[in-house]
Length: 160
Image: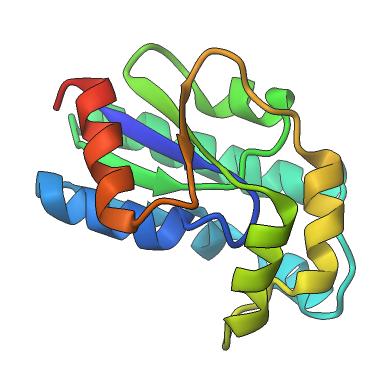
């Protein structure tokens, strides 16, 4: 199974993802590591990515998911997956389960202000919320809870 943890930057995808993967003894992967250098430069410069920027990144993620499935790997993947069209590329079949880490703008903005050494800035948060197309058929978890509670809720919802 691949658990796709989605949400805007600062929603806790990496922190929750690592904790969830550790609790399951699964592999963890962060979609940020799949971005080409040009995308990271744009984001560091405060320039939002467009669909054309994201396409090679999404194609690489899709290939990784297919590879993990072929190898029968269980992976927790942290990925913004903001738009429905992006998720359609990544949710290949029912072995990919979507978990939406949902949070209010002010809660996420507060988190981003305390972040260091990350290319995503609070200035780009507005563009992420603008691009966000909230999913309907998924597990939705409120990010204002503690990471441990969030992980427990995700595991319970997935039955694992």
